[in-house]
Length: 74
Image 1 (cartoon, helix red, strand yellow):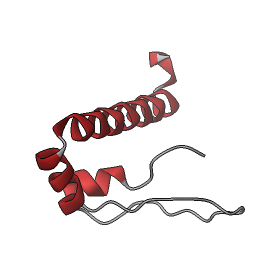
Image 2 (cartoon, rainbow, N blue to C red; image 1 turned 45 degrees about the vertical axis):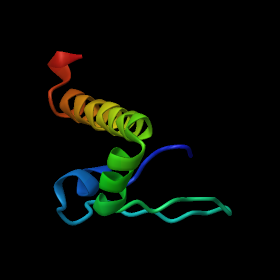
Image 3 (cartoon, rainbow, N blue to C red; image 1 turned 120 degrees about the horizontal axis):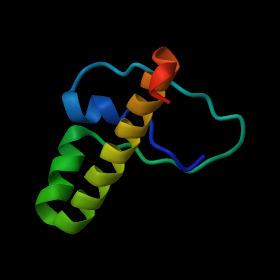
């Protein structure tokens, strides 16, 4: 709940590496790379906040993967 999915694909235009299934009703938004670019042009403060949020999430996921594969880093 409350997280992003598919952020890497929005950044690098590669196919999605994950999928999800909701088990309860939910609200969601679908952003394309073009949508992100439009947000960055038209509302740069919001665009920067979205980019920073995605960067923090990707960084946290990469750090978590690093700890799982190289436990000596923890």
